[in-house]
Length: 453
Image (cartoon, rainbow, N blue to C red; front, side, top):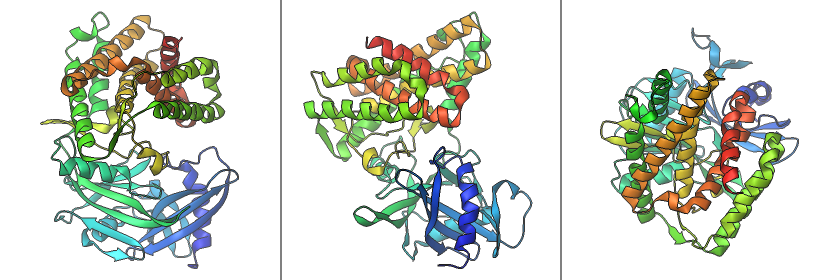
């Protein structure tokens, strides 16, 4: 054991639970073990950390650390603590630590179980971390590349790398070019397995996130209280329709390049069973779901009674307005890793394209209703909110139908079930991270579940 591991474990015990990407919030930490420790440079150490809990399976995390003898100005916000070797910082938010990781990737080297692959000549550019922490950490290099570092580790190739490479190889205009990745090895039930550590892509600096564009449209509508959604200058429906078409085109490429199969009754039964199982887990974590349990389960049961099982294929898996960029040439999709809280084996299952459609429809509801949190008690605005969501949900489906030849609204029972499944997931997320937002998915569940009665 490296001499300072016990010190680092003590620091991580208090630091890890405070990180946005830490999935163990609300669970009782039992034991933290450093499973891997590789010196990337004199400054940067790459740790793989296993977090055990009083109950349930442990989690694995990637925790690069920068260990310094100085305390540079501006580093205060990402200090992990102090060890006998020096001051310990989050190595991905330390610019020199991020630069050391990028240098390692550019080299295409292998070191103590870590290996790098690059598909293009990469310039040596300055690094700065994206400050908005989500389930992973992203670092931008100059204005050319963006490196996503996967914080929670699972055995297997991350779907983001696999799917993006498949789309890029097929010439899809709806993805940013993949440029390189880093892999490591972790323990799995089947033995030591490869795992994806980081993924480098072209940085689309001129792109604007779909969420920002959509919420700007909603604000325009709310500022014009006497106008309808189609009368406001910032109407978003045309972009929603284009996004629907781009989504359908991506689905068609994925169906042509990655495995597919036709569903059957067993598929429908298994889908309904999995939704029920996820609801069981969600209710235990978020009791606010209990009043809607019977109606949700009825909607899930209706899935098993479908007469025409859907086509199954690879999809995005966690599709929403924050996962798309509007660039000059149209819409680009990114973050194809699926819901990061679920194992890779589950995220790579073949599912109906409706999973992505449902995710985006939920996102339109979120865009409209998140701004209502700032304007409670205004009935006219509540009405406009639903009108905006309905208009853009419809436009997205219209665009999808035009590009694919199949209108997702014609599969109403299955689409509703997938929307409910996604909203149940959102309730658990909001209960853990943003309790003030709980009303958004709960309101959607009430409306969707009523349609199944």
